[in-house]
Length: 300
Image (cartoon, rainbow, N blue to C red; front, side):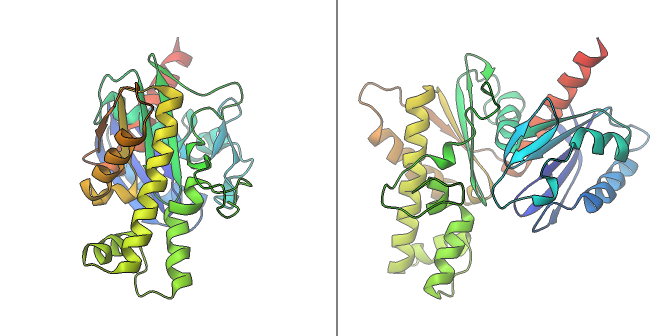
């Protein structure tokens, strides 16, 4: 049984997970990482799960990680409190348990191919549509990390518009800078629209609001172009769409799949698309697997 802590862009999610099955979970709205709050909330979960007790901690962060050092390397304007903090040491001090730290999208992919929506998949990409756009890939059963822990996770920062604005990552026309939830909220605020979030945007588009339709369709094209590039790079059998925006389900998933299948290289495999029933649990499930595996290896 593992304690899992997901420092998300808008929520702190926590869970006691047993072999991929949630025992207890909680979610707390936050603007930035709050380590004191995370410790208090996690301790409550541990106490509530007694007499069973977790044996390891999994921690997810929305940025590039140095897994060996247990640190968040870079997240660009997000989770500043976590920058360069040794989270393995923090977990040991807070809970007396060993810990593993991973990028949130990689953790989500592990969660979905282990006990989630695509169990057993060995060639897959995952795209999390939320505050930002996170991505991850597995090829031939190997989770991609790369020489510097950057591989596979920066798909949201692929250029999809050469004439687009400057993203906070430094690149131009990133998918995230066009269709991440933060970018969509910024666009809605600039328009002075009564619509304030992505859910309302899709509802307004369905109701026939012309401005909402244009903004929704642009977002779908950006998400679709991002997935096309990921498919060209990694040749997956399955594409997993997760994250908070996917609470809209097929209203988002179906147009993305249609776009991708239409625009892929002519001989490319047309992958299956899946949407987790509980996208809010993707990261926690994956952290459970990663923490259990890491703890098992260290025990040998």
